[in-house]
Image 1 (tube, rainbow, N blue to C red):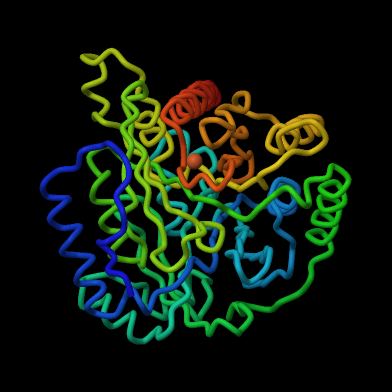
Image 2 (cartoon, rainbow, N blue to C red):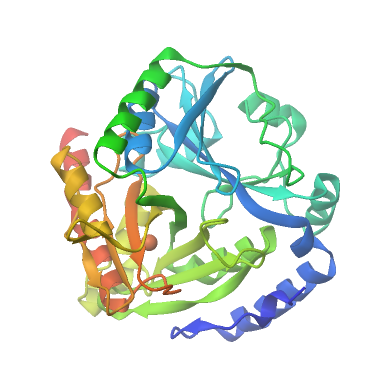
Amino acid sequence: MKASIDFKRQGDKQNSAFFEEWLGRLLEDRDRQGLTENIGRIDALMITVEPGHSAAYVHELCLMTPYNYLVTLETDQHSTHILRIDMNAPDVLVREVKDPNLHGIFRSLNEVYPVGAKRPNSRYMGEVFQVKNLHEVREVQKNREVRFFNQEQVRHLELPGNMAIVKPSPYTHNIVGYWERPDDDIRVYSLGVSSIRDDMQVAFEQAKVLREQLGLEQLLLPIDHLATRVYSQNRELAILEYLTLSSYYYWGSYDIPDQNSSTNVTKSVHYENVLNSPAKVFTAANHPYFCNHLIGQPSPTEAFVRNFGPRLHHIAVGVQDGHTHDQINIDYVVDALRNCGQKFLLQVIGSEQEGLKQIFSSASEHSSLIIEYVQRFGGFQGFFTKENVADLTAAAGADETLRSLDAEARA
Ligand SMILES: [Fe+2]
């Protein structure tokens, strides 16, 4: 197996000497301890929503992405709805808190942030990795000072009992889970009582009919990347921590000076195609907020983190390369969804010549997450062009400013 440090580096952003030293040391240690080999793909994502929101969110996801509703797992305090494309792409677990007064660790992560607190149960929780030997991963990671929820805590939190779950990261506030699953086995979550819920099935079927009528079924691909926003001072630490917890490698970082920001990409060492295990992207401002008055530039990334807390910002869904009728596929997809009332934060940006076109939807009122669509042309491997990222970041920032003002007005 290729060493995790040996992947070609992309990007133009300079890292500190600390980062470069510890990147090498941590990846070499991870390879040597067998973790890189043991930890496989991202096998599932977990998202929580407010009480009463999951049917609408299942409808939204099943219209805007290729996901299908499979089953609901009921526990005392939560309903967990399983969405799946197939066994080559991660499942999405939409978890609804039943009691609006329930207070738990994931809610606490929202509550100290002025806009995040307005929807205290809406957040992306984290991802679960498929591993070959769960006992070994847990023991090796414990020796590397990674902290796990114990079994009693996993039970209390009503998370699947067949997972080992790392406590929320101080840098991203996301969790990472591990579970053992041979490649030929189907995914089975040890959680509560399973049933196919009528309300979810109706929401899903309506979305799927619409998805087919609009001709989106053949155009939408699985998740391309997951983009997390962190405080400026945590950029390098968030990357290094994620590489410690996963079997991903450091792809590289691009500086976006216009938006006082950078985009930093990590990818699976096992899957060249991100559709099999999404890339994890970290975005951070280049300067902390208190420098902004001296720089005189916008700082949408730092503003987002101050308003919402460190968290996942968007899920990017791939769009099949090609044309539908006389339109480029991504333009066709966006027009079709716009005609159904879906809002987007800007026009589709980028071009075939640059290698990719992208757009952000407006944030979901159920999960606070944005869906990005990304179409790559002719096998382009990049994640963005600098102009695209600057435009996307600016559009999201303008929207968040409006939402934070709105939240203040309602406070
Ligand atoms: Fe993105």
